[in-house]
Picture 1: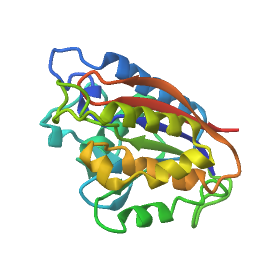
Picture 2: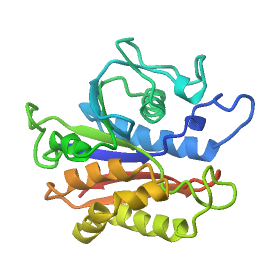
Picture 3: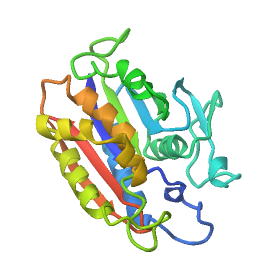
Length: 247
């Protein structure tokens, strides 16, 4: 069953040294590592990293995450997990895998990439949506799974944003954050109905990952609530770090 879940940003700047000698996103990095350490401490038997991508695919580790897609061709201050089997170059999941290793996770890991093509989200969630009640298709009911959702809210916050500023971004981010933290039936309904087109317009990369969480939590009889560890927009993109547990 689903044990705990974490939302983290996907930027490569979370990785120490990614910005060269400049010190950036130190508060965000600390919040991410603390959240992932909590996930590791909860004792999952498997971790699933869910991230938006250019194509839909499920990958099974061990992995070799690389940040070449972000223009970082060397090693990072965070050591890659052992076992060079599947190379992961999409920035979001690569950052998540590096952060998981830095937080002390070395167990069974898979990566669920959700692409923009029609039906990708439904296909991606099909194998996870019964985690709330059991272990999923072909999995033992005693299996405990941790989800790491990789993505950010709007990248159109203020004049320093990576994309042109959009006045709708602040209010939209606030509403989404409230619903993500609540994750009750009404909140899940609003999150599920959030238009993909609006997410694209506001450059909200966390849309597909939160749809997976909503689908999984909707099958669970337990009450899920989120704990906001950090919400900031240091570079004009809203970063949120959230930890969810069931009660």
